[in-house]
Structure formats: C-alpha cells, structure tokens
Image (cartoon, rainbow, N blue to C red; front, side, top):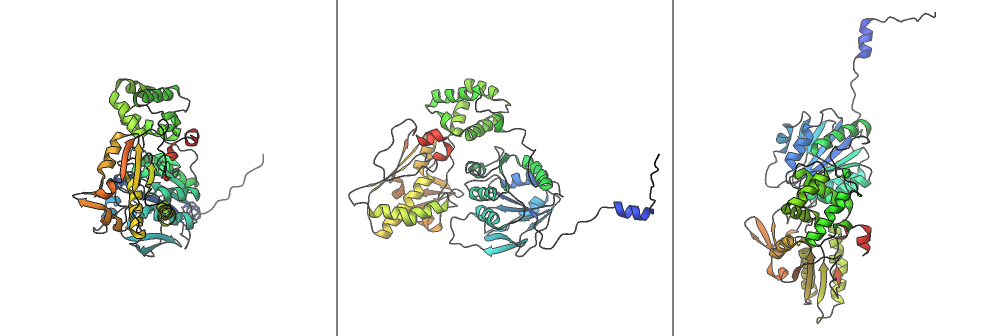
Amino acid sequence: MRSTKISKKPKAALKKKLSPVKKKSVKGERVTLVAIGASAGGLEAVSELLQNLPADTGMTYIYVQHLSPDHESSLPLLLSRSTKMKVTEVSNLLPLKPDHVYVCIPNKEIRVDNNRIKLNQRNSEKLPYLPIDDFFISLASSYKGKLAGIILSGNATDGSAGLKAIREAGGITFAQNTSAKYDSMPVSAINEGGAGFVMTPKEIAKALVEFSKKGTIEHYRPKESEDFIADSNPDLNTIFSLLHKNNGVDFSHYKMSTIKRRIHRRLQKNNLKTIKEYLKLLKTERKEAELLYNDLLINVTSFFRDKPVFQYLKNKFFPKLLREKKDSKALRIWVPACSSGEEVYTIAMLITELQEKMNLKIPVRIFASDLSEQVLNEARIAEYSENDVKSVPAAYLNRFFIKSTGSYRVVKELREMCVFVTHNILRDPPFSRMDFISCRNLLIYFDAAAQKK
C-alpha cells in the first residue's frame, strides 16, 4: 500500500489560509446596476422589494420616483427602514458602491458616468417630464456593466420606453404584476414589450438574487403566472364565448398574452387558483363578467404618449395636412380605442395651435370611438387629475385647460371639436372620408389576423 504523506503546517498558517479574503473594490470597476422606477404607490412596492433583498447581493440600486420639486424628500429615511443596505440621496460625482441604495432628487437629470452619479439641472423646456424614461434610456445606451430595470406601481406611462431600451440592450427587466396599487405604469411597460418578467416585488427580489449570482435568470419563475393558462384551454374559449354573448365583443382576436394576464388578475382578485373555478364564478356572477369585460378593454392612455410621435405630427405631418385642405372642406380625424380621451385631446391641441400659427380656420371634426361607454363618458366630461396632466407641457396646460380644485378640465373649444361614440372596429362599419386615423391605442393589442383585417 502506498503511503500518503501529510504535510503538517503550523496552526497559525492554516488559520490564515482558511480565513475569508476581503474583496477590494477596484477603482473604476463597473458594479451590477439595478435601476428602479415608480410613481404613485411606489413607496409600498419598493419597500417590499428591499425587505426581501439580502444586504449582500453585491449589486447597486438606484431608485427614481416622481417627486414634487417644492417639498424635501423623506424617501431615504423611509426606505432605510426596509433594508440593512445603506440608503443615500444622490449627489453629483458620488461614487457607486455595491450593496447601496441611491435615491433620486427632484429637478435633476441623473446619469451614471465612470461608475459615478452625474447630476445635471433639468431642462424645464423639455416636456413632457419623464425622469424614469430619461434615466433608463441613458443607462441602456451608455452603461457597460450588468444591468437590470424595474417598473413598479405608478400612474401614466413613464418608464415604458426606458424599460424596453434596457431589455433591448441585453439587460434583465421586470414589471410589477397585479399587486401594483396603481398599475398604469407597469401595464404600459408590459404592453410596450419592455418587461421580461412580470412579478410581485417579493418575487422580483428573489429573481434579483439569482441575477446577482449568475448574471442571468434561468431557473426562477414566479409560482403564480398567467402562463399556467394554455392558449388551447377550452375554458378560455368558453370565457370568450360568454363575453361575446353578453357584450358582442370577440376577444379571441386580441393578443393572448394580454388577455391571459387580465384573466389572471381577476383570479387573484377573487382568491381563485384555476381558470375552471373562475369560469364557474363568471357563469353565476353577472357583476364579475362586467368587471372582466372592462378589464379586457385595457383603458391605458395618456397625453403626449410617446413624445417623438407627436413631435413628428406637429412639425411635419399636420402642417402638410392643413395646407392641403381647402377652407370649405373639414378636416376629419378618427381615433379608435380612444379610452378616456387623452390622445384625442392631444391631437386637438396640436391642430388648434397650428391653425392659430398658420392663420387658418379650417373646420375640424375628431371622431373618437371605444367599446366602453364608461370611458367615453369620462372623455366627454374631459376632467383630469393633476397626475393625468403631468405630461402636458405648461404652455398647453395654460392654454387648453381650466384648473379647478384638484383637477383640470379641457376647454369647451376643444370639447366641441370631438365626438365620442361607441364603436366595435372588428364588427361595425368604419368611419368614412377620413384624413387621418390614429390606431396607436388599438393595434398593439390585436393578434396578426385582427391587425390585417
């Protein structure tokens, strides 16, 4: 038998060998960065996220939330109660460190340059003000380290373009699911294709832990997901038949991922586990069928949604359209799936402003249609909250809105320009003799067959 020689070393040397080696941070080394965006209801969501994150993931977190420029933010203090990581308000040239949470400040544009925070004074003329999109897009274009983006609870659509940019740049992206207190921001991000994962803040935290260890997310998936509903599930088809019978709308032509997400949302609201249980509820509770129908209509819109589109309409397309019109001929515009009217009134504002600048008096009629009478009534009233009009430039807000306590109402001049009617574009005859049709709130929710039709 061959003997094995065991080398005996002094205990002190052995102890030195086994003791953990402290990692020294390399100057200029890029940390794994997690960018988080939220608005209304965001404090609760990000607190839940931080509560479920270990304090030693080695990642750096930057939190951007819509903040009032008139009030001092207490976010660092509030968030420090939810984590053992150090929570710091950002400052110019502040170096980024692992296992730190950095919180934005109002009226500043945030950038990351050479592993440091860089703050620029916000350009007040740059409207609408979308700080989350602005920051996320800058990271997607310039940050070279591992990157993750998260959109949590909030109203309107800020963050949709930014999250999509991060995903397209190879980053990991998340949007909060139906647990969001205000779901406009995460729903918009999901619908725009920016969210790789749709989860609760707690589930996002667990997925981030895997991301911190592996740089990817291969194994973790939320236990409860709309993916559990197969496209071929006969109960899904029965739900479509039930809605078609009750409301005359065939939702089988809508994108399945969107439909299943909305059905899953209703399951969670009713504490149900299977689609079969939910179908039974739909058959017995008329009210639930109405709630699902309204949910499936996906009434997500905002003023000046996707700013470059409206810049093009204002600077190029609408002036050309107006110049080609004779004074006796009315300009006819149609906005299908108009929801609560924000896009309709945005177009009306641009047309009115251009006519004044071009010294024209062409009659304008904007036909706006939707399946939901409820949102059409909201559009006719044209009264919007302060949060709803955040994306409206100040000059337009002063010119086209009347402010009252806690809300803004579109002026009568614009309201009289617009006609809101119930219309099913897949079934009813289309409006005729149109000069311009805006389908931006509609086509993204249809499958290929419905889009072609």
